[in-house]
Length: 494
Image (tube, rainbow, N blue to C red; front, side, top):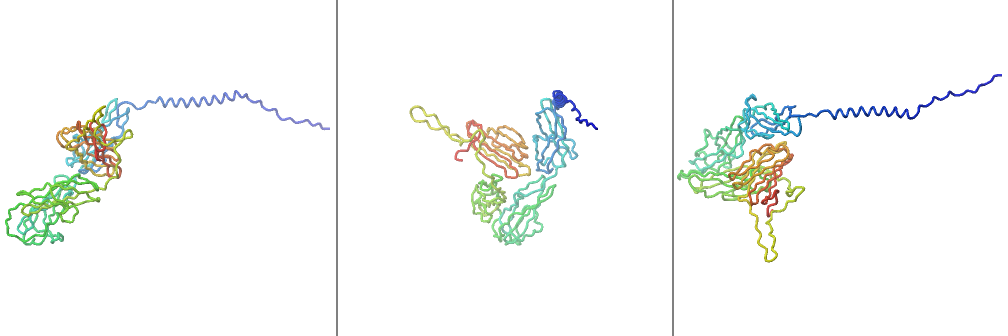
């Protein structure tokens, strides 16, 4: 008989105490945290770069190297204690980039090339300064600066009596371009309407005596301007049809028509002030007549001074015809470029204040009796005129002229904020009635803003704000500065 013995499973292994397992886990976590803390301490204790500025990437210059074009400096890369302040100095070198010398007042981040730069290369020196010291680094030289070709900005003109036997005198008109510019003359015979013109052989001087062949014809003058960069030509308006000889005296000297206008770059709807500066060498002017609509009738205004506002953007030709007491006539014409108006600008204000109109101060009335009369605020006389001339470029506005006309002794303060400011702050006093602020002339980056304050003690002064806008015309605002007020206000009646 077989006896079966019951089977029993093996006895379980005894478990480790829970406290021991926790101690092992905590030991591992502590070690990891200690490693992380040590790494963090190592990073925290790592010394930061310190000391005076050190250039780590050379400054550079960008821009087209042609007379009249702007160059822009890049300061490069620098290390050292912050904050670091940077200063710029442009230098003119020979054609190989050596023998450099500093250009007076060329201390901005941008610089507009001048005729003196033609044939040279330029460098910019950047000086970095902090509390520990200063250091300088110089850019590589630019390409050789080339001349700018002539461009006609005021067409040639003809003066004299269009009559057989009389002498016509030409003037070259107005041109831009790098000096020296040489001019060549060519008189042209046209039909009575001024079309179908052909060169007159050997008529290549600034004056021309009318011959019987010119009778019933109109004449034009073609002027060709040439400099080292090239040449360009411009034609005058036609004369009236040449009349036959009257047999009268030929001693009269014809008048000379000329005029100026302000502002130089008007916008649509802006009133333009035109002033004749014409003269008659041997007598007095009998008539001065204006043509604004290009119909050739000279019936839009008369007199020495005229005003006009154009209703559309574009190039508009304005003509002035003057007549002397003997009936001799001269015509001067200029093309005025009218820009589209910028969007309207709101009132001059800051988040902390709202500007109020300029008003006469109110006297505190006495407890009895009538209130004393108010003392009106007096404006500067003549009231300041701020002129800013420039052109749009891809990265802002190239300012070519900034000038102020104001009473002698007036104080002009300038503030500039934003990219590529030619100068951040400027304060000066007018020694005469006109001041040109050359340090403001240069490239003003998109988004930057210039503010001009023109003041005279006890008088209402002028405030002008000019802001460059990306891809659009600049915004300008003019306002008044009450005596002693730090900010502008609307002018009375505005």
